[in-house]
Image (cartoon, rainbow over all chains, first blue to last red; front, top):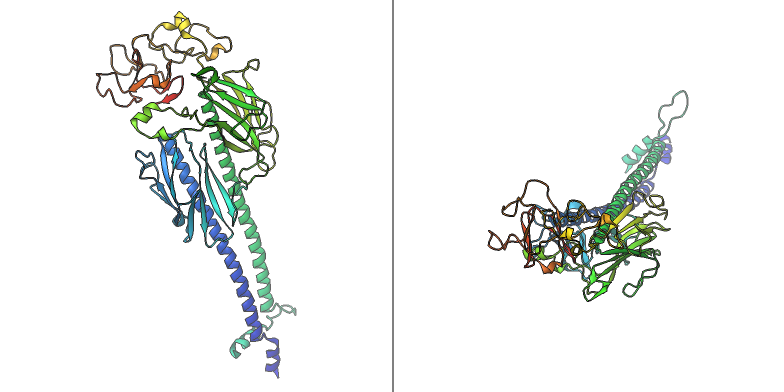
Amino acid sequence: MKSLQAQEDAFTLIEVLIVAAVLSILSLVALRSMLVFSEQRKLRTAAVELSGYLQVARNVANAGNAPCTIALTSSIGGTFAPDSSVTNNACKPGNIPPAVRLGGFAGSRDLQATTLPGGGSFPLTFTPEGTVQQGATVVISSANVPNGAWCVDVLAPLATIRLGWQQSGGTCNYAIEQ
Amino acid sequence: MKPFLRQIQRSRKPFPSRGGTEAFTLVELLVGASLSVLVVSSLAAIALIAELRMGREAEVNQSLRDHWARALAFINNEAQHAYWIRTTTTTWACGGEGLPQGPLLVFEGPPDPANNSLPSWTVVYGVRANGGSTEWRGFNRLVRCGPPFITDTRADTPEARRAEALAGNLDVTATPIESVIADQLAQTNPFQTQLFDQALAKDRDAQVNLFLSRRTGLSYPPAQTFGTSFHLQVRANRNPGFDVTGNPACNTSTVNGNEEPDINGACPLFALKDAQTRTTYLKEYNLPSSGTLFVNACGVDCIGPKSTTTIDVVFFKGNSDDFTKQFAAPGMPNASAPCSRTSCYVSNGQQNVQIYDGNVLVFFDRILRI
């Protein structure tokens, strides 16, 4: 009888399983949110890194009093480097890091860099005055961040480098202060 | 399963009581611990978010200051290549869409060779409202309307380096385009311009105030009259100001003849000025009518730089293309090598200048930094 009383006070297996299941679901939801948040941070880190690399290129052109050309290329992983096809490119090893790999730097495996307009690859040339004739945009996205992507924009003529957020299906928004 | 249930059953036994009061059960403790974890986690999350926001805030501020400094430097640099500066409050047609009413800051280039009454190029700065655009931050943005820049000829080749000038390489034949120089301008009266001498229609100097703003639209720094920390004085350096050939004092060839006048250069003892400008900004060119002028040299018959005062800026009376530029005079070692800071020989066939340790060559149509 005493044993029976004790059993009535205890949790049943079903109760324990239900609680465990609820906790697991909540944990999964939280984990997924954390992963998305973490991936978003990685994307932003990658965007800031690219922004810094382009600023260095602009400074090299300024300091060297010679044009500096960076090849902007759409790629998985997002690798950017001086344009080796340009002769007398002021941006060369020794003046600037030979390449920046955004995915590796930010720790994101699924990072995708897409150049605008049109994708593909094209050269971005900083003049010795630190200006550009035509601007360019690189969108940095990841399959793990379904709600949007980061944009790195080089604005002509001042080569102003700015960050923006592209909501999924929308255009890059530079008005928000990220 | 029974051992497990028994274990839970044991867990529900109360802790030994103290003073006759019933203790917490393990479940109660677990619930309490969970609540504590929730509270601590929430506080930690709030602190983390605040930390992130602070970092971003500092980043945005730094970025804004950087943009601002570059915008000011850009405007200042462009002004230096101007012949005249003026302001206007009328709407300015720029391509398809005109700039709104001023105040507008207008830089005019040297007279058009085909029509001396018109400038060869015009650049206008004004303010355009952002109107809630997702493209620009803040309430207003500073825009530039003018010829685009030529970058095709900026290749780092000796020929291009000799021929091209910094920021003077405007494509004056192209249709003027509108470009954004800076955003995040204040909501009210963000752009103030005034000529140094307000009695003049055009001047070589002007004062510019720009006020920035973040979010609120209130200006930063607070709007004041001219003289705040974002105050900029621009100066047009192209305008020669007076005709040197009309004054015999300026026709004397000296070592300093091509230096900025009224500093150590030409006509230092004469208060020359034309009808529209002040003596403070006089400058002219004092090339010999024939032969070679040596700048920063140890003498006419001596090759090599002198060891005393150095002239950085050398002025030429003519367009850049009127002069050939090379390392040294014909017949000298490495004569045809590119003009450099070490040695630069500039000639139009009659007037020759050999410059050592020079820095900037100013022509009518462009400025060449070597």
